[in-house]
Image (cartoon, rainbow, N blue to C red; front, side, top):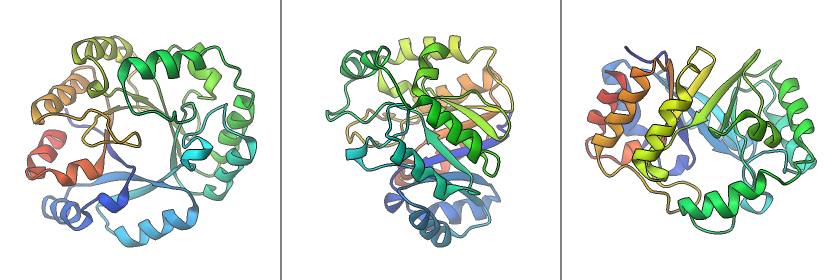
Length: 260
């Protein structure tokens, strides 16, 4: 089984070896999609022109400054949610997550001192974000990326289900916590949720915005996660991140795992 869509997030496009990935894709006639983190339409268009490859389909990944919370959610100010308007007509992905915390990544600290407290906080602008997404989805294909939490929690964040031009992506990074526990939970979550409008993200191949996220120690864990998704009938895969992939000396081998 091969995936129908193969998508990469690129949170730090300056760190991507674009010539390396373009050459490899062109040699093998393989195609991927890449969503580029950008604070503005102007920044996104800069990277789209710079990449310019028929083997890479480019989408935007709107983000805010760290001071404004970085990700979007019902906790985001309306004036910041309105910044999404400039991406009208552009396909983009949106992380629906509470505001970025001020501490470094730690699994238990993130869970108990960051995420769980937001389960009970009032997200006063969830409805505003939902309306904005529904309006923009009339002109844009939007991937809504969120946690594998129960629906009553993610809805409070402003996370919508897939419909119309909206696709749903679930974050399934096994590197971010106790791996056996994470894999067990993700298997249960993914089961019966696979369809053409849903995608699942694995990682991490590199550190993210926290700067200290755990990453795959070698290709074996990556292979296991790819196989897990295939065995569960997943059609669309997302991988964090493209910069991490192009840092690999044996990048060709990692790509073979994805396309095999």
